[in-house]
Length: 140
Image (cartoon, rainbow, N blue to C red; front, side, top):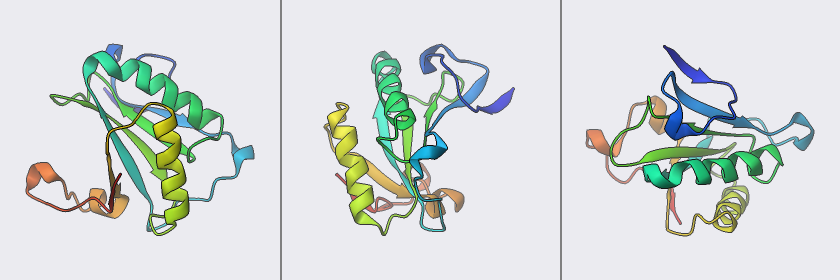
């Protein structure tokens, strides 16, 4: 099994041979490179909603409306009860950019509050599921 797929046109709910599907913005959009303060908005979706939401997020990334990358869990990486889409930003301290991306997600239909988590917390394996609380830098 492969851990990730660079880019796929498949629906996440139907993919069972990789853990993640990725979307990348074209280089011409020149989004700043990730740094040690990078992070992501976490968009949780039920199985019946994941494919439509991922198509919208993927399209927005590829059009330069979000950050440089996003990824979506697949059937192989699915953990009850929700799939997750990670929409990355380069620096959580750039609150203007972080909130710009959050607003773009609202325009795509992600209206309920969602958490923003730093990559440093993920790298350190800090998850709510293993007892770490208050990880969200933002909850909008």
